[in-house]
Length: 273
Length: 244
Ligand SMILES: Nc1ncnc2c1ncn2[C@@H]1O[C@H](COP(=O)(O)OP(=O)(O)O)[C@@H](O)[C@H]1O
Ligand SMILES: Nc1ncnc2c1ncn2[C@@H]1O[C@H](COP(=O)(O)OP(=O)(O)O)[C@@H](O)[C@H]1O
Ligand SMILES: [Mg+2]
Ligand SMILES: [Mg+2]
Image (cartoon, rainbow over all chains, first blue to last red; front, side):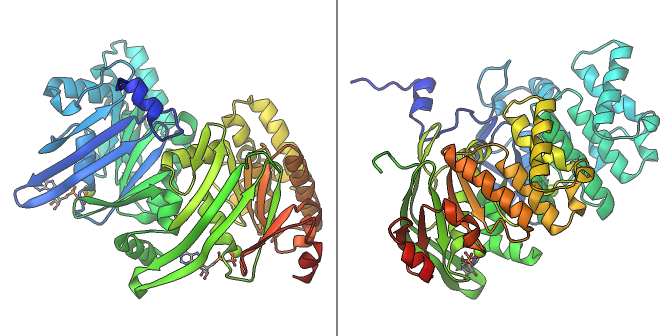
């Protein structure tokens, strides 16, 4: 008897019900900065259409992991795969800098806590969004403007201000411009690194609300990093809990909050209650 | 009954480990029962007996520490006690419903859209889905002027009606109910019992905890008492039921 080890056969054998395969798979990611072990043997899996929340105290490695997902950094070990319609499977860390840039521009959107990382502060908001479309090859002024407008509208940015420069806008509005830029090309993956941290509580609620609507209407796959359990609770379908560069627990969001298994997660959840 | 059960719970055990107290809390131990399509199982037991915990363990917001929950899903048989999270998510979307006393209200979503959503996800057109949603809101006694409003501002009873309309609009294969009548008026309770009776006739299996089990007396096939873990068949143990 010969063993059939083709991917199709393996998938049939997998002890899972679900046909859908992960959009994102990361295996054994480790990264050190000098003596600091920012990530230690981290695995991550994200399925299409879900919101994966990553929570953990400051310095636990959340942003480092998200930067890996955005191909801004390369780990010491580990591999990263995305299942995209027009690409072959392969470790994305093997791509050249140029290939990474093209892949990210086309398929991955990111919103940073700090808008200076995501935006050109002295260029118009619409221009910031259009720049993303330019990278992807769009050249017609009318199309650029229409699509920037649409993305800003979907991000619930007030369109009468679309030509204002981010530097003239409030923190909440800057995040909406980042969001518009991130979703302009309908990315397969939207990465959010503390997108509402530092905003007033009421503004934070409005921005989260926009994210929820986008998620519901467009089924965008999201990875949301936050040190704030409340933010994770309102947004995430599944949760990874990080500490000292390691994943200490992951599970369905309701399980993590109602029946946390790891002492550290219990401590986090109880501190919040 | 000779058919394969829809659900076979075997030796299910749930203990909460509470680290900061360095203690363990045994919610229930070694619970076993079968549930077939179209059967209604009532959970009984005093406060703290573990009724809600059992429902949440089957739903998998709680993780069991032992035992199995064999479930015959439309995609094949699976042990809910050990299934991957992604499969649990899928089954929650497609086959298993859970109604608690708490509404999962979402910002800026109208009551009728909350109720219609399961139909939309199942591919039913917007107009048809909204028609049905309004029908069920009406059945449960939610006033028409509230249909387009956001339930986050509703009274507890109104929220619960929205909750029920949403949870029961599509027949699931397995329905878990944790005191769904707690904040309902008589009219809504009757509507609920009528709907449950319909769903049961369509083969939906139901496990429920009821504050007033008398409301659903006509639907109960079997019951399990979590104080004693005795499983009783309703038809043969009528007198036990009365005695409890
Ligand atoms: N580029 C870098 N150079 C040196 N140390 C870094 C760098 N990036 C992150 N670190 C360190 O790695 C650890 C994890 O950081 P980070 O991923 O930003 O945590 P988090 O986002 O969870 O707060 C921290 O100790 C941080 O100081
Ligand atoms: N998330 C939890 N963490 C710790 N203990 C819990 C949790 N949920 C329930 N319990 C405990 O489990 C026991 C059973 O509770 P529960 O299932 O709510 O009882 P019932 O619904 O029968 O009144 C109680 O002692 C309760 O305090
Ligand atoms: Mg960070
Ligand atoms: Mg209870």
